[in-house]
Image (tube, rainbow, N blue to C red):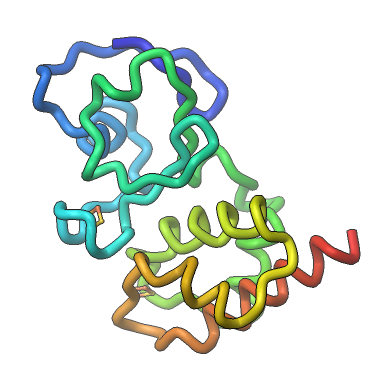
Length: 153
Ligand code: FES
Ligand code: FES
């Protein structure tokens, strides 16, 4: 299969039943994509597929043929965090980091479609991402802060 990953062309051999999450982790080294539940519940494997956020444990690798895949590795850098990453750090919205990449992707997906979400809309958008460490209040605050920063440019 061939697809684009974080802006670069990728080619790999997969079986028809291989999951996209396994290709991303094992073949492509994009290990920000985590496997928490492997059944679409935890959100740790959330990525963008052609600009839409999806849980990559629910997508067959071949479904990404010819498409654009974006993982957290395609966002910001250690020296220059993107606005959502920055807000997560400032609001202490992360601890172990297992869930955080998926949270950041889901938050970015929300803000792309709804730049000024209400608390309820943030909660609804993040409901598919589970975190056992922080509680959700700081995650909510971080998404609000990122939204405010994006609003103010
Ligand atoms: S590993 Fe995909 S949703 Fe949990
Ligand atoms: S920071 Fe999310 S599970 Fe720990």
